[in-house]
Amino acid sequence: EVQLQESGPGLVKPSQSLSLTCSVTGYSITSNYWGWIRKFPGNKMEWMGYISYSGSTSYNPSLKSRISITRDTSKNQFFLQLNSVTTEDTATYYCARCYRYNLGFAYWGQGTLVTVSS
Amino acid sequence: DIQMTQSPASLSASLEEIVTITCQASQNIGNWLAWYQQKPGKSPQLLIYGTTSLADGVPSRFSGSRSGTQYSLKISRLQVEDIGIYYCQQASSTPFTFGSGTKLEIK
Image 1 (cartoon, rainbow over the protein chains, first blue to last red):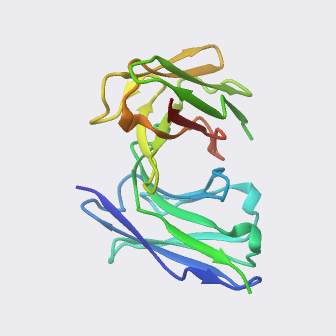
Image 2: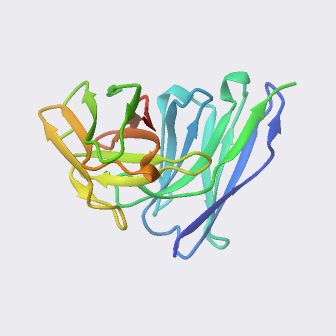
Image 3: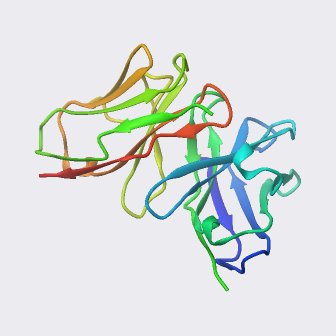
């Protein structure tokens, strides 16, 4: 069974970097597509980006050059880094695996709330 | 970016009632449309992919359809466990985008 688990700080100061880890069990991250999605207070959902089975990445242009998604295949983990955060980045962050590309996200982590505040 | 206009924003319906939620895509996305259900305190769950295909374990009272660039999710007989927020998502091209959500309650 595929399981995903996010981890990382729940509180980040403005202008600092947000770093999250997604640990995956039951499936290799060298297959399929792995994404980060966030849900803002008020229920808006935003796809942030993904890393593919080959290590290629795709990012939401709205995040410009602030975002980076990387991976460690030896630990079966992938990572999110979001730089220069503001209070607007306060959200619940989810990691997820595509069912198949173009077919939505079939497996999700439980989500982690990240608050940006001084 | 492709915009997904979802309606209604909220919906209150009776048990056993038929419920329909719609999403209008701002351009052609073919059949690359997914629906999710998010129950309170839980992660989103994939209900429908490829516009009409039911994800594993999803009850058959859920169904998806398409007319042009309008997509619909139908719950044929509303049950108590169906309460939550429903989202559509286009998976045609990046950036993948979501509808604004529909909060479903029992009347």
